[in-house]
Length: 134
Image 1: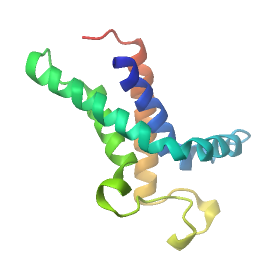
Image 2 (image 1 turned 180 degrees about the horizontal axis):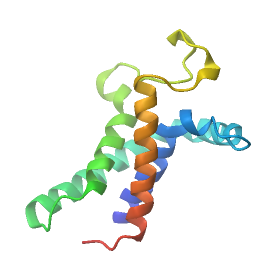
Image 3 (image 1 turned 120 degrees about the vertical axis):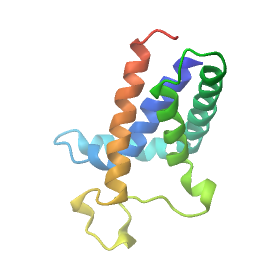
Protein backbone atom coordinates (compact mmCIF):
# COMPACT_ATOMS: atom_id res chain seq x y z
CA UNK A 1 0.00 0.00 0.00
CA UNK A 2 2.90 2.35 0.74
CA UNK A 3 4.26 1.62 -2.73
CA UNK A 4 0.95 2.74 -4.25
CA UNK A 5 1.16 6.01 -2.32
CA UNK A 6 4.72 6.62 -3.46
CA UNK A 7 3.93 5.80 -7.09
CA UNK A 8 0.81 8.00 -6.98
CA UNK A 9 2.95 10.86 -5.65
CA UNK A 10 5.51 10.37 -8.43
CA UNK A 11 3.05 9.98 -11.33
CA UNK A 12 0.66 12.61 -9.98
CA UNK A 13 3.54 15.00 -9.40
CA UNK A 14 4.68 14.40 -12.96
CA UNK A 15 1.22 15.20 -14.29
CA UNK A 16 1.11 18.40 -12.22
CA UNK A 17 4.67 19.46 -13.10
CA UNK A 18 4.49 18.82 -16.84
CA UNK A 19 4.06 22.55 -17.57
CA UNK A 20 7.53 23.17 -16.17
CA UNK A 21 9.07 19.93 -17.39
CA UNK A 22 8.12 20.83 -20.97
CA UNK A 23 10.56 23.73 -20.78
CA UNK A 24 13.56 21.40 -20.35
CA UNK A 25 15.82 21.41 -23.39
CA UNK A 26 15.97 18.24 -25.49
CA UNK A 27 13.53 16.21 -23.37
CA UNK A 28 10.67 18.65 -22.83
CA UNK A 29 8.76 17.78 -25.98
CA UNK A 30 9.00 14.06 -25.28
CA UNK A 31 7.84 14.56 -21.69
CA UNK A 32 4.93 16.65 -22.93
CA UNK A 33 3.85 13.95 -25.38
CA UNK A 34 4.17 11.26 -22.69
CA UNK A 35 2.12 13.34 -20.26
CA UNK A 36 -0.51 13.84 -22.95
CA UNK A 37 -0.86 10.08 -23.30
CA UNK A 38 -1.25 9.39 -19.58
CA UNK A 39 -3.29 12.50 -18.75
CA UNK A 40 -6.50 10.59 -19.44
CA UNK A 41 -5.67 8.35 -16.48
CA UNK A 42 -4.93 11.27 -14.15
CA UNK A 43 -8.21 10.77 -12.33
CA UNK A 44 -7.21 7.19 -11.49
CA UNK A 45 -3.91 8.42 -10.06
CA UNK A 46 -5.84 11.06 -8.10
CA UNK A 47 -8.20 8.49 -6.60
CA UNK A 48 -5.29 6.20 -5.66
CA UNK A 49 -3.44 9.14 -4.08
CA UNK A 50 -6.51 10.19 -2.09
CA UNK A 51 -7.34 6.68 -0.89
CA UNK A 52 -3.81 5.66 0.08
CA UNK A 53 -2.97 9.06 1.57
CA UNK A 54 -6.22 9.08 3.55
CA UNK A 55 -5.66 5.52 4.73
CA UNK A 56 -2.16 6.27 6.04
CA UNK A 57 -3.32 9.55 7.56
CA UNK A 58 -6.01 7.71 9.55
CA UNK A 59 -3.62 4.92 10.53
CA UNK A 60 -0.94 7.33 11.72
CA UNK A 61 -3.41 9.56 13.55
CA UNK A 62 -4.92 6.60 15.40
CA UNK A 63 -1.96 4.32 16.08
CA UNK A 64 1.02 6.61 15.56
CA UNK A 65 3.86 7.23 15.51
CA UNK A 66 3.01 10.58 13.86
CA UNK A 67 1.61 12.04 10.65
CA UNK A 68 4.17 11.93 7.86
CA UNK A 69 4.49 14.31 4.94
CA UNK A 70 4.04 11.45 2.45
CA UNK A 71 0.34 11.12 3.14
CA UNK A 72 -0.30 14.87 3.30
CA UNK A 73 1.35 15.32 -0.11
CA UNK A 74 -0.59 12.31 -1.44
CA UNK A 75 -3.90 13.80 -0.36
CA UNK A 76 -2.97 17.17 -1.89
CA UNK A 77 -1.93 15.48 -5.17
CA UNK A 78 -5.23 13.62 -5.25
CA UNK A 79 -7.23 16.79 -4.67
CA UNK A 80 -5.23 18.69 -7.31
CA UNK A 81 -5.70 15.95 -9.91
CA UNK A 82 -9.41 15.57 -9.14
CA UNK A 83 -10.11 19.30 -8.76
CA UNK A 84 -12.29 19.57 -11.86
CA UNK A 85 -14.28 16.47 -10.89
CA UNK A 86 -14.71 17.59 -7.27
CA UNK A 87 -15.74 21.18 -7.94
CA UNK A 88 -17.04 21.13 -11.50
CA UNK A 89 -14.57 23.88 -12.44
CA UNK A 90 -11.48 23.38 -14.54
CA UNK A 91 -8.12 23.38 -12.79
CA UNK A 92 -5.60 26.03 -13.93
CA UNK A 93 -3.54 24.84 -16.88
CA UNK A 94 -0.48 26.35 -18.48
CA UNK A 95 -1.34 25.17 -21.98
CA UNK A 96 -4.90 26.51 -22.04
CA UNK A 97 -5.24 28.69 -25.15
CA UNK A 98 -8.22 30.51 -23.65
CA UNK A 99 -6.20 31.77 -20.69
CA UNK A 100 -5.01 34.86 -22.58
CA UNK A 101 -1.31 34.09 -22.50
CA UNK A 102 1.00 32.77 -25.20
CA UNK A 103 1.71 29.05 -25.15
CA UNK A 104 5.49 29.50 -25.16
CA UNK A 105 5.60 31.41 -21.85
CA UNK A 106 5.03 28.29 -19.78
CA UNK A 107 3.24 28.15 -16.48
CA UNK A 108 2.23 31.33 -14.68
CA UNK A 109 0.10 32.06 -11.63
CA UNK A 110 -1.79 29.11 -10.13
CA UNK A 111 -0.49 26.76 -12.84
CA UNK A 112 3.07 27.63 -11.82
CA UNK A 113 2.26 26.86 -8.17
CA UNK A 114 0.76 23.52 -9.16
CA UNK A 115 3.83 22.74 -11.27
CA UNK A 116 6.17 23.51 -8.39
CA UNK A 117 4.03 21.41 -6.07
CA UNK A 118 4.24 18.62 -8.66
CA UNK A 119 8.03 18.74 -8.51
CA UNK A 120 7.84 18.54 -4.72
CA UNK A 121 5.48 15.56 -4.98
CA UNK A 122 7.93 13.77 -7.28
CA UNK A 123 10.73 14.27 -4.75
CA UNK A 124 8.50 13.12 -1.87
CA UNK A 125 7.46 10.04 -3.84
CA UNK A 126 11.06 9.11 -4.60
CA UNK A 127 11.96 9.69 -0.96
CA UNK A 128 9.11 7.42 0.07
CA UNK A 129 10.47 4.62 -2.07
CA UNK A 130 13.69 4.62 -0.03
CA UNK A 131 12.17 5.31 3.40
CA UNK A 132 11.17 2.29 5.52
CA UNK A 133 7.49 2.16 6.45
CA UNK A 134 6.95 3.32 9.97
